[in-house]
Image 1: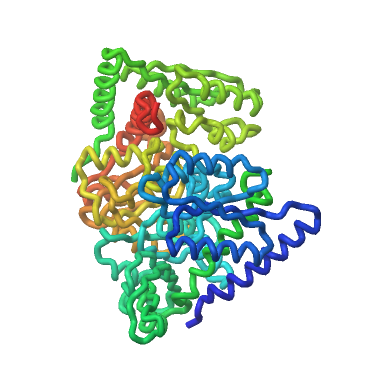
Image 2: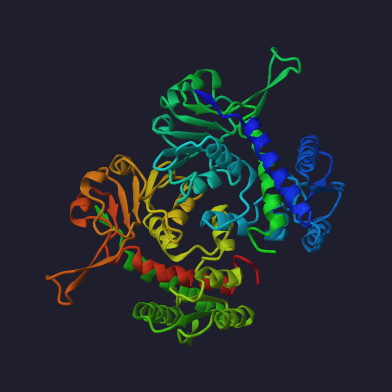
Length: 294
Length: 294
């Protein structure tokens, strides 16, 4: 059993991006510039945006955070998005979710210029990814793909079972891994809350991707000997064994599943560290005009 | 075993659309208007466009065909698309594929205003469909959904196996049937040329959708007793038993598979007749501004 070390891969990719940015700037090119829109003062959102700023600085990007109070109207926020769309110095930007209830997430997502939509949530990017065209792929599925690629895990003809059909993980990774590509060419089964005989299906998986958000849902008896297991879940539970009084659990009962696997992601330290890296990759692509041209 | 009679369902839906158009016009509303762009003189394309015109007249739509010689440049065709985008009388339009080799299909598809893209091939419509938002769904997957719905076939929790991962059939139907909806909520497995142990997988299918384009590929031993089988394939083969010297075969070996099924589509007369109906449904939606507003 080998651990899929997301932290190590993240560092590796970060160094590659930093080297590329340095070369671009050296050649007289523009420094890629990522902006983040942050509405309100949600603790988790503040943390995420902080991590993104830090990653930008590590790879040599310019970064800007636009902060708004949660009293901002939908129209005002849409205007801010339009300003970012029209600002030639901004290569890509994200609007940190969730937004206050009086603002429609979907309306805001669709207002972002697809060429600057480095979160990959705009229907144009989802559609392009689905039909196999170059697109900004959203962070978690792209992170999984990166992990499979860097560990050179064989995927063609493998049966990949995806647990969860969310628009941000399950569905896009199912679409990606069934593409004629590497990593891809998998036979993919997408399971969800309505699936019957779930364990029977998961036991046939060469690659099992758990993205349910249900702590320790996947047990040893659900996993085939030699499977590759990717755990996307993160649930915070109380613990009397940690200083903080909390610990993070994945969707996989790690201790009993790991011995059966050929590869498995730890939680934390698996897919998680790669999500911010995917945002950096997309921003670099945006800066280069690699998807939609300059 | 019951036949899924696409011809009968198509007539049924056509009558419903005709009644709705009549009511709209009676109330002083605008007659929905579908335009088709036809480049060159390909026989099959001429036939398809002819069928579409006929269907328009049957449901009470206005229809226009714009014909161009296959010497038209890409730029000229893109200009024609722009004109249609800007023409307020045209509610929806299609560009009949395939186009001459010197013109990029994808460029033309992406030039169509998504609000008028009644073929549902623009990435915006693909993306919206993928994430479960209202969208123009393309003809074949929409036809399959209509068939399942009209025959009230139970889908929730069923295992649906899709053979084929094309962007016009396999992939969209896999995405649709895994949505939280009816018909939908299926556990979906998408198989393709790289799939191993195919028969083992198809034998677990409650609903089997064959969209490979490989005549009589699916045999009785690949099908579970009681399965619903939807055959999307149409291959023309020589025959000494028909007057024309040709016959049409589906992807399913009908004679041996049918006795095992609860429901099965004939070929022809299954999904086929519903594809033009889906185009009519989308044009009606476009006329009403039901997806993107007026």
